[in-house]
Each structure stands twice: as structure tokens, then as C-alpha cells.
Length: 262
Picture 1 (cartoon, rainbow, N blue to C red):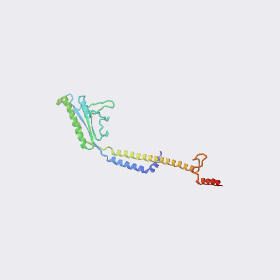
Picture 2: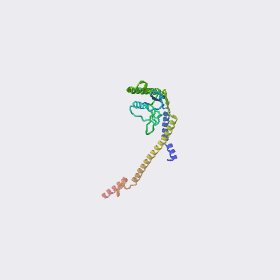
Picture 3: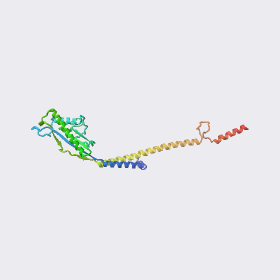
Picture 4: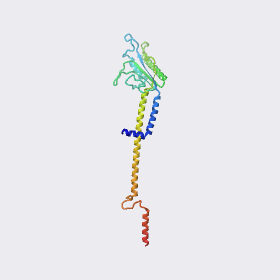
């Protein structure tokens, strides 16, 4: 289709284009007024007690705290492994989860292997209000602490050797995100205009094809009428036309009657 044909379709089917642009404007307004989402993410460290040989509790180690963190994450998620993004820094909002929560152990491995290097859990929550997010985060913290205490009680771990907790950041920072509305408006506007133009082309071609079929049908009917008027072979060879004037047959009958009388 040439540019001239495209412009002709848009001008001819201007009502279709106008309807599409109105719908696009409505979608732009809805996109601009769409509410944002609140979210928070915090890393919970499971720290073994400091010793003279390992005074830094945050230093990477291969102690039992790393498997314990993985066990807690598995139990919180009811044994169902999470399908996480490649980067542990990705948030729920980045994954399109605007009302939910997640607890997982950070994995620095790649596509083919896991690599758990620190005894920590990443706790995330998202929701429609800051209160919902804060409540979910606090509930997850309490659940982690209860599960760890239950395992330590079952193993009869002395109080001085039990795991300690540290949050990073130390307080939950609830954040608000409404995306990139200007970019979203540009995408919606371009997509709406393109679909409106496409609708003009489709409607124009459909109506033109229907009109051509109607013209062909009318031409066939016209040819049939011409053949009927001219006589022809509608009744077969050697027969009189079905459309012969009635007066001719009447005259012939009158002649035969007259001859018989004579």
C-alpha cells in the first residue's frame, strides 16, 4: 500500500480513525491516573556467635548458618522453590508482582549452578498501602525468628551458641513506585494511533470487497434480463420463447377457427 492509498483510506474512513483516537485518549487518561505500588526489601542476616578466630559475624563462612537460611526459606515457601530473577537485587515490582511477598536466599550463581555465599534471607513485600507492606514485613520477620528458634530448640542448641539476627537496612524503608508514566503514555499513544490506522485499512478493504461482489451480482442479473427480453433459447431449441407476446397466439387461434368454419 502506497502513502497515497493510506491517506485515502484514513480520509474515507475518518469515523473509524476518530473512534480509535478517542479510545486511545481514554487509555492515556487511565494510564496517567493508574495508582502506584508500595514495596520494601530487607536482608535478614543469620549470624553465628562471634569467636576469637572469627570476630566478624558478617564475614562469609561455610558454617551451618547458610544451610539453615536455605531451610528457613524452603519452609516459609511450603517447599515450593521460587522462580527468581537472575539478579538477587530484582524487586517484586520489577517482576510485576504488585501485591505479594517473597522470602529467598540470595544466589550469586549463574544459569547452570547455584552459589550461596552468605547466611542471609532477602525479605520483600508489596501492596497498595504502606501499612500493608509494613505489616507483611513484620509478619515475615516474626515467622523467620520462630522457625529458627524451633529448629534450635529441637537440636538443643545452648543459648550462647544460638543464631542472632541483623537487618540491612536496620529499619524497613517502604518505597513508592508509579513507573515511568511519560514513557507509558508515549507507548500507548503510538500503539493506539497505529491500531486506529490499521482499523481504517481493514474496514476500507472489507467494504470495497463487499461493494465489488455486489456489482458483479448486479451485472449478472442485468445480462439475464437482456437475454429474456430478446427471446433466445430459454425453452430449448425449436421452441417458442417463453416470453412471446400473448396477442400472437390469440391471432393464430382465431385464424384456425375461421378456416374450420369455412
